[in-house]
Length: 324
Image 1 (cartoon, one colour):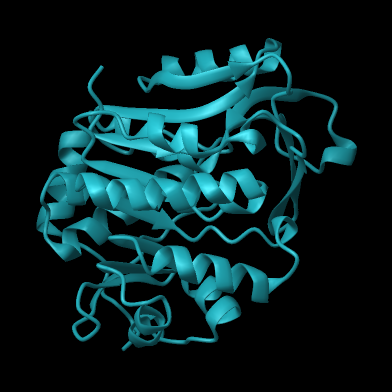
Image 2 (cartoon, rainbow, N blue to C red; image 1 turned 180 degrees about the horizontal axis):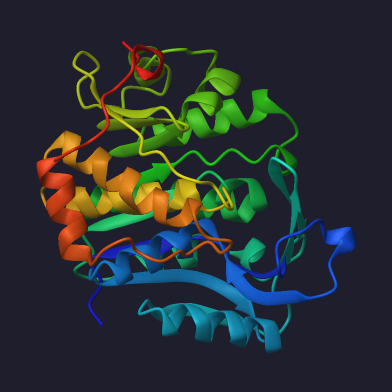
């Protein structure tokens, strides 16, 4: 497969109570897989775009299962290496009333050993877009070098780089360390996606334009403001804003990756700014209404794209959801 998009980062075996309930009370557990970067690749593949995932997994039963599941979703997994000397990471979802916490067991995983070789492998000929997240540089020093190398190499090759901040407090010594590293990386990327809450915590910004400046004026900044709206700017002056869709939330984990995939789909298809944001909302709503990271589409992908383009019957943006 010749991929338009390559997503570089760790995917782990995922254990989820079924039906959803607190982990301490669960009698039945479901084994699947999940990872921010492979989630994006899976959504893009389901939308009909050639997408690949580049990573390392343990050469163990869990690793082979993860690899098979991602491949079964239509993602090119030929860039994934199996490591006999390190395990596949595992995480547990712990649904609680009003929120879901996550327990990670990933220290020393095969993916935490990624380095510059993985970055070079990810940039295969013909790739249009390389997708990264702020999770990977937090995993280890070698992973941080891999992300740095990937951004530098993509610039040399003319490959667009998208970067989802994806701040995970448990992976960093503190917000200050994360802000420094992630700020350095995002300032060199073509597309940056961030949550409004992340931007406020890490860089002390409360508007799209302030965040764009704080992140080193990336090519395009997309700010997700939870259930209210999403915003984008490409020049630090004009901001496009689109209201989020109302949704009955079953499970919020993975919705940010779904939004990123929808927005990137819009970019790859040449949709206007507002249509890209609408596509992000549409795919995110599919994730929010599912207990898994990869919910069912409300309609066929072609109809989703048409709705994103036209914006027919789209909710009005309320003042509380708008940002300058």
